[in-house]
Amino acid sequence: MTFPPDFLWGTATAAYQVEGGNTNSDWWRWEAEGHVREGNQAAVCCDWWANAERDLDAAAELGTNAHRLSLEWSRIEPEPSVFDSEALARYRAILQHCHAVGLEPMVTLHHFSNPLWLADKGDFNSDVVVDYFSRYAAKVVDVLGDLVPKWVTINEPMTYAVMRYLTGEFPHTRRGYGAFMEGVYNLLRCHAVAYHAIKERHPAALVSTADNMQVFAAPPDGTALDRWWAGAVGALYNDAWPRALHTGVFHGPLGRRRVKGLAGTADFSGINYYTRFYLRFPPRQGFIEREWGPGAVVSDGDYGEVYPYGLYQMIQRVLPYGKPIYITENGVPDAADRLRPGFILDHLRQVWQAISFCYPVMGYYHWSLVDNFEWERGWTQRFGLIALDLETQARAWRPSAHLYREICRSYTITDDMARRYAPEMLPVMWPGGDQTSEVF
Image (cartoon, rainbow, N blue to C red):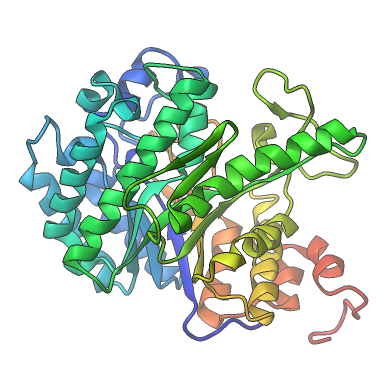
C-alpha cells in the first residue's frame, strides 16, 4: 500500500506535556492541588525546554518529515501584556532545529494550558480572553511566523470545553452547561482573531484547528433512544465546531450563534482521532459508557476501543468542507507496545484507502513521539513511540518506532512489515492471501 511522494509523515507533542517546569500554567497549580491520577505531576517532563533537540533528532532518525508542536502561552506571556523575549528566542531555536533536521513544523498556539493570570481572570468564560489571545497570537507570529507554514490556533476546542466546564477534569473556575457554551463561544472568537492575525502577516500560511473527532455509537444492545443520543452527541462534538469555522455560525442544542469574522477561517481540516465510545440514554455521570462490544480490543487503562475504521469515517465526515485533510493526532496508550504496531498499520490502511478514493489526506502525525504527561491521567498512560524513563530521562525505541521508521522511509505499508511487527494483522489487512508468500 503506497502513499504519495509528497505525503507528510509526522509525530506530535504539546509544550506542557514535554517541556517541564511550566510553573506559570494553570495545570501546574491543578496538579499541586492533587487533581491528577495517582498524584502525578509534570515536573521536568521530557526536559524539552533544555533539550528538545534530542527528541527532534530522533524524529528525523525515524524518517519523518514533519512535526507538530505547541507553544506554552504561560512562558511567552508570564504576566498580562508582558512578553518574554528569552522564551520566544528559545521557541525560535527549536523551530530552526526542526528545519535543520528536515522536519516541517506545524505549530499550535493553545494546547489545553493557560497562564495562571488568565485563569484568575476567568479564562475562556471571560470576554477579556479574546483581546489577550489576539495580542498573544500577533506577537508570536511577528517573531516566529517566517518559520511556520502551518498553524493550529486551538487544539481540540470541544474536548477542552467538555473537560473543563462539563466534567471538571481540567482546571476550571466555573462548571455547567452555561459555562460550557460561553467557553465554546469565546474559543471560536479567539480562533477567529488569531486566524486573521496570522493571515495578515503571512497570507500563504495554512491555519485551522485540530479537532478531536470520535465515533459515538449506541451499544450493541442499545435502544432507539441510545442511537438518537449518540447521533446528537456526535453532531455537537464532531460537527458543530468545524461547520462554524466554514459558515460563521455555531449550532448548539438550544439555538444558533453567529461569530464575527469566523466564516471561512479553516484552510485545512485537522483530525485528532483515537477511539469509539458507546453512549446510553439517559446519560450517566461522565456520559461515556466504559463498556465494550464482543471481541473489542481495549487500550491501557480502559482509555478506549481500538477501532481503526472510525478514522476513515471521520475523514469522510469532513469531506464536504472541501479542504486538505491532516491527521493531526492518532495514537494509543500502550506501555508494553502490544497494540501499537497493529494500531499503526490498520489506521494507516484507513488513510491509504481514503487516498485511494482521491480524498485529500495530506499528512499523518502520530501521537506521540515520546512518552509525555497525559493531563488528568498523568504518567499512567504511555503514548510514545519512544519510551521515557522519567527519573533518568533515558529513551528507548519501542518496536513500533522501528515499524514507523520503515513506513516513513519507504512511503509504504506491506505484508512483510505486518509479518514482522504485527502478524495478527495479516488476515485483517490482506484477507485471503497466502500468508507464507513475500508478495501476494
